[in-house]
Amino acid sequence: MTNQVEINPLNFDVAHDGTLDQLQRLRIRPMAWSCLGGGAIFSGQTEQAQRVRAVLEEIRVELGAESIEQVIYAWVRRLPSQPLPIIGSGKIERVQSAIAALSLELSREQWYRVWVASQGHGVP
Image (tube, rainbow, N blue to C red; front, side, top):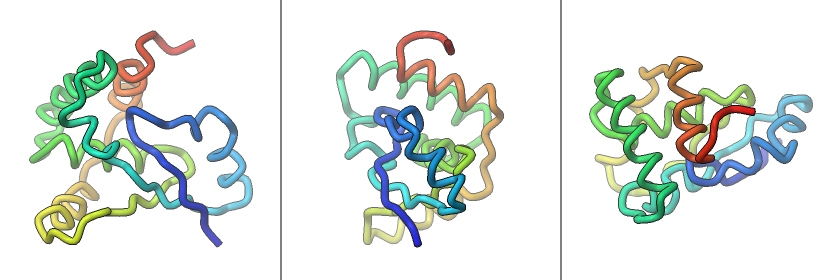
């Protein structure tokens, strides 16, 4: 049994509304769709998108990742419910990038930097 939920650095309400907590209690690994935010993370002009993009780029450099796309996949996988990202592309390059992201591991501090950038305020 699984559940598909939208999880990305611009929209992760499921991390706050109890959805992921319930799936974790039931030992169900969610399948994460729209991990890349429909492209908004890369080209969005909102303040939120710009903040998130800047932090993802900083973390990309810290980790030596090829792209912020890889950092996003590592960020999603760092959630305690261990979501399985759905790769919404048939392009081999995108699939290869997602596979390469499996070797990346964000620290808690790095994960929360993305959270803070997305929310626009510090951790409560």
